Image (cartoon, rainbow, N blue to C red; front, side, top):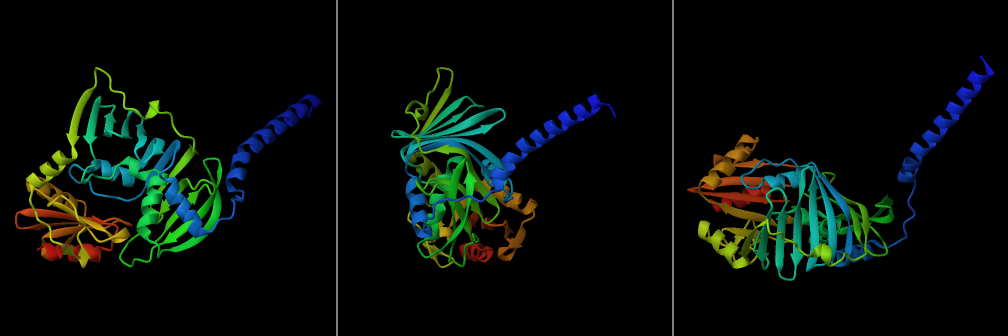
Length: 356
């Protein structure tokens, strides 16, 4: 072998070693132990709940493996829990925030301002304003940011939940402290909620639910967002629609006056303005009952049946199980009911049976 060839191989060996080292550095950083400041679980839980109301901003991503049937008018919900959602989050406080859901062809923005809630649909070039707080709405991406989801789950788990310390992780470039919350409610399907948060500010950086749903920041800061980014900016070419809380409530009640009972499955009904929709119980074992009108009800029942639902309620309904979220749709006379929640199937089938 010539001297030239030996030198060339030596140079390439050096290059390969350098490239290998550069590739390995992120892996070493990712798997190296994280020395997050020591904090008691109860104190961390309280900081996480409080931080959700404060300022923060960043880029977040949620991933779910909860398979739900494509129910009529609820396709977006199935995508939220059974796919990947990318979000840019700006949060100044509970009354001033914006969440932009990003996809390859556009985005959908949710705004909360002092005057109401706004939604911007890029694909439809449409702004929609909701004045006041709606009596009821379907889950949306803004509910799945790490701080908001952590706040809801930690509060619903209650003060009686078991708190455990988890090893720290490096998330969004921060040394995050870990917390596991184990609910003591025997009827909920959520067996554990894992949260990693900045121990100083309490900002939740990652939330994992029962191994089937994760939401985390890829970058995050507690710097407050600018006022400009929080203000809806409609152009002259945009469409615009508006509704109020009273209009939504009246229209839902007008569609079907179900007069749902005061208790179901041994749980009291949560007070609310709607006769066709109600929540029952408290905490993580709360479930929802919706009276679905007419043909929409028939389509909902058929969707659950065609998705492989198991016959229940004497053959007049179907049960669809997932890892944490269960659904029962049953027909009573000419009316169809949808019963769902993070609760054991037996609770939902019992409630559906009482509706008969």
